[in-house]
Image (cartoon, rainbow, N blue to C red; front, top):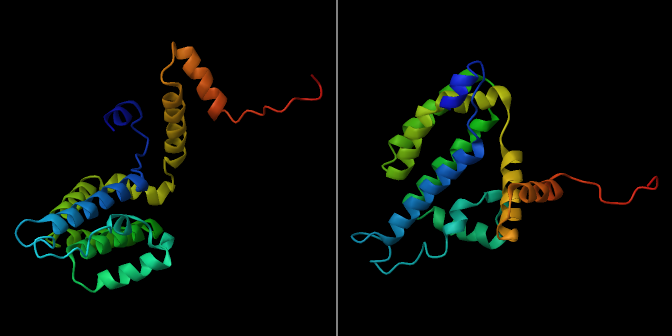
Length: 193
């Protein structure tokens, strides 16, 4: 961010919504772990294993749940669990990306932020404070509607090339492998050759 401000002062910085979702997901998981393993009033001490094996239920998109997961979530949501509140706060934040007007988005965030910081869920409140510090650069998403998903995907493919080779003798060989696997080359023979 410092480099962009120094070298490209007219550029807008857009914080990626997928990284924001990652931070919120990590906060939900931290709440789940604390609730499951707390020594004093935790569920495990009381002999309950209601949260056992539910990690990915709280972290995945509800649209991708199987029928079994939907039923499991239905049973969990009415138990007044802290992780349920954390999950609700995380899911509510996703509504921000649908806003098109800045004023409405600011109003939404103000209400969401109050809810998150008054939830008495320390990991969630911590992420909310971080999001508030970077709010102006999060808000620029509504103006530009861009993410770095393509770059992240390309980087993942490059890391896979690097890993599968177990190292390259020089940078030129690494560069050629990247171009080969990521360059969308047409490897079919041409008739004019």
